[in-house]
Amino acid sequence: MSSTAYSNPVPLSGNFRQQFPMTSNRARVSVPRSLPVTSKGEFKWANSEEGDISISNSALSLTPNFILPVERRPNLDQVYKSGIPVIDMDKEDTNTLIEEIARASEEYGLFLISNHGISQALCEEMLSAVIDLFHLPPQAKSVLVSDDPTKEVRISNHYRKVEDNGSKKGIKFSMWSEVFKHPWHPTNDSFTDLLPSDHQSYRSVMTRYAKEMGILMSRLLSLMSQGLGLESDYLLKVLGKNPLCRAQANYYPPCTNPDLTLGLGVHTDRDALTVVLPSPDVEGLQIMKDDKWIAVNPVPNALVVNLGDQLQVLSNGRYKSVVHRVVTNEHQSRASLALFYGPDKDALIGPIKSLTDEQCPPIYRHYYFKEFLEEFRNQEGKNRKVKEAFEIRR
Image (cartoon, one colour):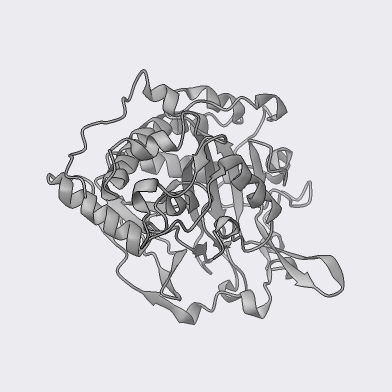
């Protein structure tokens, strides 16, 4: 393991701007210009019937399209409490920090970080803006609703398809959540031009939060590189000069019967790294470890870091892309904001040569990330197993 201390290996101005370039496909985006905010007590699904703006329990009833088949239900009585690593990012001994992050990345593929450098006030402001956005009235949110994955800015409901003998397309089951997706950038705030202009609080706080998150992600990738015995800037370089940076805000309203549905289905993240700002006092996130579901209990002022498929491929399986899901809560709503860092679409991804040998041969073939994205879209609606499609068969 490298003993090199973290010393700002990626410039945070000038060249750093090139590490997080903006996407250029902005012509496809159509964003409304009038999105009035309503009371936080009046959440309605974006696809609620137009004109249904009164308080109505039926709007949040657990209708059949949310109720999963028995074999897909969460079995909440079979979830375990276990010690998810909580790592203090303010350690004086950098070598110890590198070792702790590497161990958590190898054993869990997920860990929490405290003293991460983003102020509690900014995190609270960001989460409040997320909640406000989801409490826009349905007729305002509906103009952003789309299932088209090529749209950069959209509101959607995730779903799962279950095969049905009587239908070639299968049956779609909605997840008990609403998500808002858009690009982000740590140094160039022009990405906010794509966001609803009348929800200024979200635009403003996201600009500041993205800048802080860019610094944090750069540091995390540096520490993870060193944990693999690589140069501190190795992972940032291999992921490319034009990485894919995307954000996903999530809202999970209270659910009358959490045993029958999921907030987000079982999955791994397609990108390299995800950092999540969660509601500080409501459980929901769970990970799979040793064939058991483990609850990730929220920790005050901590962020959640989880590794995606690209880090598992690059490390040749040494770092784990964590299988996770989100369950619902009967009495409390939950919100979160996930920022993803993925490779350049033209980046060549595969096991790093120095991490393979005769005893540890490559598990995956090399591919361009755009190939991975195509396979990802081909598995839409399924419990995706995208990186498995690139495994070398022996």
